[in-house]
Image (cartoon, rainbow, N blue to C red; front, side, top):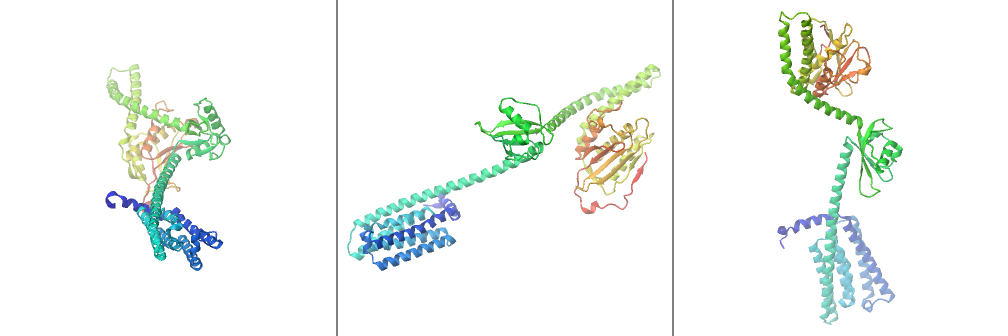
Amino acid sequence: MNETRDGTAPRHSAAAALVDTRAEDWRVLAVLGPYRLLLVATLLTLFRSGYGPDLLALLDPSVFYNGCLAYAIAALALLLLGVYRVPGLGAQAHLHLAVDAVAIGLLVVGAGGIASGLGILLLPPVVGSSLVIRPRLAAVHAATATLTLFAAEFAHQLQSRIWDASEYSQAGLLGLMFFVSGLVANLVAQRARRSEAMAARVGSEYLNLSRLSENIIESMHAGVCVIDADERVRMVNAAARRMLGEPLTPGKPLVAVAPTLAAALHDWRAGRNQSAPLHAEATGREVTCRFTRLGWRDDAPTLLVLDDAALLREQAQQIKLAALGRLTAGIAHEIRNPLSAILQAGQLLAESPQIRGEDQRLLAMIQRHAGRIEGIVRSVLELSRRDRGQARLIGLRDALLRSAALYRESHPHRTRPIEIGDVGAHLQVCFDPEHLQQVLFNLWDNSFEHGGRGGRDVTVRVRARIDSSDGAIEMEVSDDGVGIDTAEQERIFEPFFTTHAGGTGLGLFLCRELCEYNRARLSHVSGGPGATFRIRFATLIVPRAATRPAADTRPSREGL
């Protein structure tokens, strides 16, 4: 048989590798050791008691005792080799059969040949060795045992000078039994090895999939909790623990750690579904819960999927704002052309000498409100086009000085002082320069227009520092104006929210959107006089030499 063409050789090689690594195969050879010792003890007992077969009486006592002693010593030596597993499994299997063949063959010769029936004692060694070797070698072992019986019968007839051909047929039948038993045992062992390998592979894949599922569930933003039929927590992920509190651990009763959730589970099982958010006692959060039975039996566990109600509302708000942004951008684009025509017509009418008195006041009102609408349209279009900028590494101090100079030029008839202090020349941020300038202009306009209500003089201060915890750069824009009311602080970043009669309500919203686009975060800092806004820029990884302060870091003052 050509093994390389039909693929048996690779399969046998894999089986051989598996044989060398399976501990069960070594246990099979270890069982043969007690079998030999038990066989020796049984033969000695029968020989000494006189109750054994008459064929045993033919044996010379001294030869019989010495043979049994040698066989027992060989059995102990084979047990010792099996403990140390040296040499390998295949070599030891051959050695086991060789010892058994010699010992039992001599016993058959001395006991009267194959007619004594002692040749059947070779069957356990043949079956045992066939369980741990390859199919071809199993056939070799069966052939060796068969030839041993033929040789024993030939030696007996040669010694007794009585030739009987019928005894060889009996030896052939025993040999056939060896072949069948050995090959069947080897086939069963091979199938057991393949089944074991497949079970190990499936178990490994199941373990990998189980770990993958656990990692996915643990990293989910939604809370996942499994409750068994006794309403005990079987599994919970990190998001569920954050929503419901750390006491939610596997093994605890659900009613003890989350009574509201347990009551909702009872209502669901009773067919009373509740869509209202639940209140988590430990954390105070509002959560929404979805229940799913994992199985068809009544005692099947229940899967609970938890979501933060506040986060869902925020996501819904973001979706609404995104849709509103696209709608308003489209409307603003369509309004801009006719609005430009209205403004141009108003300017032409203002130059006409026929417009006097009440008509002039009405025309000024039209121009003023048309200008306000134009400001809203411009802000909306700037918001929709914010993705055109390109963030890059810029020096923060230089950008502030340049923006302050441009701001001064845009307000030549007004005194708006801006102090730029504690901003080191070595500080660099990743931001689009045009976006940063737009954000600063909006913040400064809010400080002077809203903080200076009632004719109050306002001074704006800009400071920057490095957060020691993570190395991020934080810049604060503060003023000494009237500040922001506590009731309005939560709404100042909402679109179209304004407290100024001529404001659009898009300035701070646009600032936050531009900051988020540049991976920065704009927030309001409560407390203290006036209003303070903080921009936390994205953390940069720069060489240590680049983080050393420059020689001249003295604060400067720009009076506008």
